[in-house]
Length: 232
Image 1 (cartoon, rainbow, N blue to C red):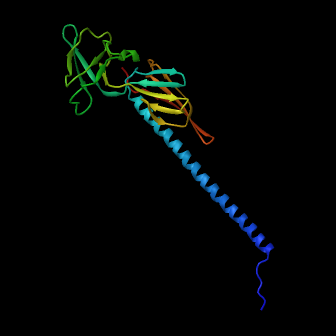
Image 2 (cartoon, rainbow, N blue to C red; image 1 turned 90 degrees about the vertical axis):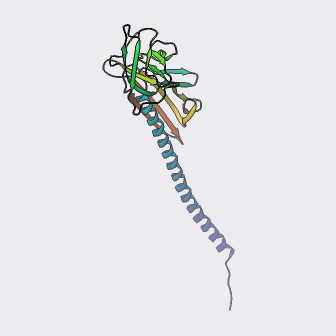
Image 3 (cartoon, rainbow, N blue to C red; image 1 turned 180 degrees about the horizontal axis):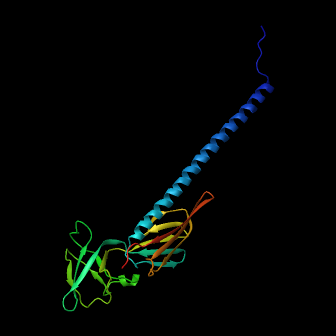
């Protein structure tokens, strides 16, 4: 009985057909992997954008009114403000209105105000500088103290705000990132802008946020107007 094997031509044809099939399958797998990778990257970018904008929006809405300032330097733009730690109401007494007592709306009331400051009727961020006579250091659990001089201006609703540290969100155009007090909270920021509109008789202050996130040739742009809820 005569036994036959594969000829050289048959082997070459088999190898060529097999290589074509392997290349086709590999291309299909690569396409699927790239699609999955792009989807994950796109989802990460959208989640990051949602996180940083939501965080900024919440802090801005509950910041001390008129504590906002926008500053620009080489390759950077920053939005700074003072978040509210406590808020409440005050009353003045005494013949010269120099005895100030206050309550805060938190339950239970804090046991100590150490390291905090109180401000009444702020109109600009410079009012928060130490030494202003509407800006007072607090200590212990004291809720009554004597003023060195009468208040130069008062809140119509006799509201007060207690705050501590300045918060600064900065757009770093060279690093394409957003930082909060120097700590990065977002990357892949291709462009952006912060601005602040002073309050009017019809509305409170409004912060405008514009951020563009870019990655893998795709970009997402967000425009948000955030109104400060508190009024002096």
